[in-house]
Amino acid sequence: MTNSNAKTARYAQTLIAGLWRENPVFRLLLGMCPTLAVTAAVKPALTMGCCVIFVLICSNIIVSLMRNLLKPHLRILMFTLTIATFVTIADLFLKAFVPRMSEMLGPYVPLIIVNCIIICRAEACASKNALVVSIIDAIGMGIGFTVTLCVLAAVRELLSTGKIFEVSLMPDAFVPWAAMSMPVGAFITLGLLLGLVNTVTGKKA
Amino acid sequence: MSKIKYFVQQSWLLIVASFCFGLLIAVTNAALSPTIKQNEINKRNRLVKALLPEAKDFILYEEQIEIQPFRGKTENVEIYRAVSEANECIGWSFEAVGSGFADKIKLVIALDKNFEKIAGFDVLSSNETPGFGDQIKYDYFRGQFKGAPAGELKLVTVGEPGEIDSQIVAISGATISSEAVVEIVSNYVTQVKEQMQKKGIIGNDEQ
Amino acid sequence: MDTLNILLMAFISVVLINNLVFTKFLGICPYLGVSGRIDMAFGMGMAVTFVVTLSGTLTWLIDHLILMGTPLEVTRYVCFILVIAGAVQLVEMYVRKFFPSLYDSFGIFLPLITTNCAILGLCLFLNLEMVDNILEAVIRSFGAGIGFTMAICIMAGIRENLDLADVPVCLKGAPITLITAGLLAMAFMGFAGMIR
Image (cartoon, rainbow over all chains, first blue to last red; front, side, top):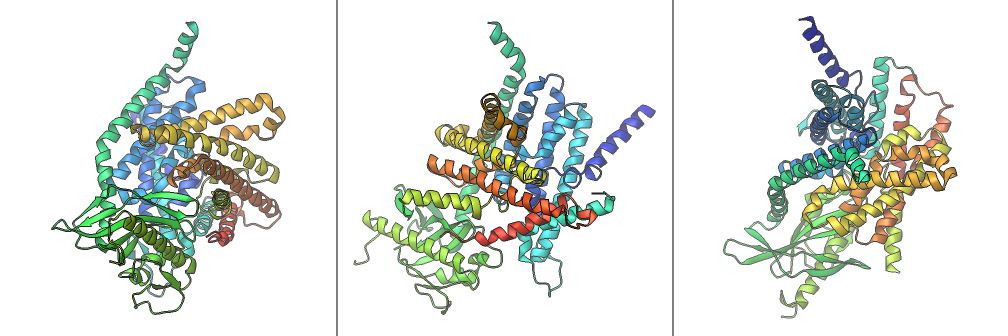
């Protein structure tokens, strides 16, 4: 009885770690490139987040299944091959079912292959743990990443167009800040959000 | 022999995995590629239908027209014939590309059946400054091209946007983007028209 | 003469106007991590330039000679990343054996570069913009590396001075670097529209 309780507690802990304590963007500072590139609006951010969750889960499953068979010096190559395959599949699905989003995201979908988050999780977690823990870790990290992207995108979209998902949320007198949808806004918003997270968690330097 | 054995022993997983992944990609691609192709066709048709409303279908013209988008480069342009319900040609359309303020601007241009007037254009992709160059997508600018003569167009900074002629009034604050679009349209339309007249696809102006 | 003109425009476009870091958001991870000191930044920049020129050319060749138009096109991403990983591996072995002093100055960065989004990103952009001839591919790759080096050295120079400034505790480190990068991005926007 206590054994399964301990296991469930461990699973829950792994799940929540990805959301806050080890949030990939805010705490581990991984996967910056898509964070800045696709967060001009909430819809692309959400789409990118879902792709990353899909690729994370699939690659963690495969790596975890293979973990006892891997030769040490071919490890990274195997990870890269796995991730590249699933990203290609995800890209094909996007092109087929949501072509407009696929166009907006453009070359940033294949860049998920070199997204540090996925390789780091494969290396740090999936290659050392059993199947279920790996899956839960993937889900936690993926959701943490998606939530971060959406928060950033919401701020940028709200300030640059006054709407989120076409719903107008700002008062009529609000003049949109065009700079928010450009690279300037991306960098500065992320920097300020990181500063905010640092204050909240009491991080020192 | 032992070298090959060693090699296989070390990398059998890699080889098997590559094979399996390749299979997975191939299967997904085979299943999804008709949908993907259809999406591309739909996107084009949707945009051009807005410019040529009576069109029912768009047929790719077999002969490719070669033009020079700018000095030193040649490009093959694919021309589409727009046909109506009664299967008669009511217009033409093709894609055009040129450099704008920030990055490349891709347009799809539609003309009437005799290549005399521009039916309009739509922006396929652009990266212009939001709020300024981005306005090339809106009616103030696009509306000036509807019905303009198919030939050299000139950008002016003051004028009557309501008057449809070969003068296009620039977007205030986005002169370079406006100039870029005018140049792309002029360049492509004049060159394609010249080539098509040479090949006898459309009548000459003198007739 | 026209070809030279086009190549020159392509080079300036990739270095200044469509700088990889400031307009396309590529290579941010090493940008934030290694821009602490100018000598490290320069080393990283040079290593990236070296690798990106090589990979850009190789992937362009493979794309045009083997992949395009064939059913194998769908394996493009897998091929690109394998070529990049292989190229980096070969370059590292070669440099370590024949140019040990060079290896000492930028050897440690080489393995990190494989997962640098800038390399794969550039290869994909070369493909996206339908670059026609190999000379333009080489110039664009080289320009991308130079642009990255320029961006990271500017950032390193600024950060060395920032160390002496009074930055609020919560913003120290990555946040203030990002805000500085934003201001630099705004400055680089001034180059837009430079070439017609």
